[in-house]
Length: 362
Image (cartoon, rainbow, N blue to C red):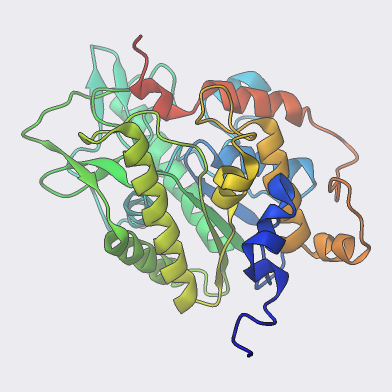
């Protein structure tokens, strides 16, 4: 007897698509579009997003940076002030709601009530990017000028990019009860003061994530109609949860919500594609080999594996590479004038995963 599984392709069967390859299993089938080194690429997300941006730069891809440090500023100092980590100096954008509000704030459509935090007598912190200025801003005028420059850079990135890569990081966030403004970190962790009467914990479900991301894409296409979008789920696990659940269950919930949301969004929008970074790292085929000793951080080898498959399936050069039958690591489009990207990647990994601040105790 014949049935729909009789002649199923290998990638549809666990034994032939996963077990036969173990950690080298390739879960990507027919990625819907390709990008080229000339495409202007913008990334956003949590602490995993800068690692992807760094690898794109290493391979000679056009990672678009619209908010740049002064040319006389040393590279290490610029990195401390968050220049070059993301396309603009917006820091970590963990949730779809934060991403939507970033766009609306940049275009003057949303002005949060709680738009600055004061620390002592001489430190002012941006609630929506609390770690981008190590010692805070010296005064309100400096803060407002920097924010105006920042919003201009965000608008330029959104309007001129060809490809937007967003890596979902968390479903959990803290919001202002009055206007719903969401923060990348709980008030009091890296600035501000937590007030239970003002701040509320929110843990988004699938419907909320899909609604927020759909609105973001609709409003983004008002200024960039030909944009292609790649969605991914960060394989980095939670370091802490604001809920009463065990952190393992809370992290699993967040990953499941984001994976389901990505599926719903991509099914309705042909210009949006899903890249399975989470499955590549956290799938059972890896036996945990791509997680660091803390069981949540992704090793360099894990990032390498993600980017090997990204270049193979998502880039023009990767299509040529795959057709040649080459089985070695992808090394395409490398710039002749090399920046020390390895050192920069190490700095990115160690310095500004802002969620680390949630668990500094013993």
